[in-house]
Length: 117
Image 1 (cartoon, rainbow, N blue to C red):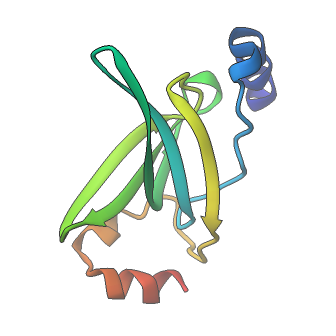
Image 2 (image 1 turned 45 degrees about the vertical axis):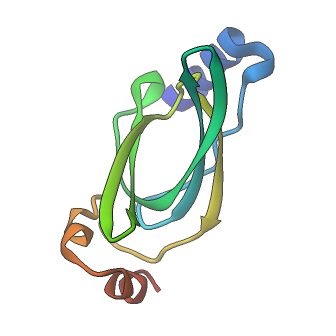
């Protein structure tokens, strides 16, 4: 019920800018397209990584995505219904049994791939 209400609110607010949010869970690999404003310019930045957790419900729901870039772990928290999100693409489903995957922070990329298979 809360998700349906949040979707209705977002459709009313965004109009043509409304994006369909795929059904993803922790462990899934997603590609998040975020609108970045730098001064006068605006561009789309893709952030591809593993969802390590979701939090909240309704309009205030967020999700956390982790990736390793140049050997450094990077995590970002995205509001699910932010107008800055251009799109969320589900790249790959992961098979995990936990809701929060914070234990992935201490693992190498290779171990993470084995764990999520």
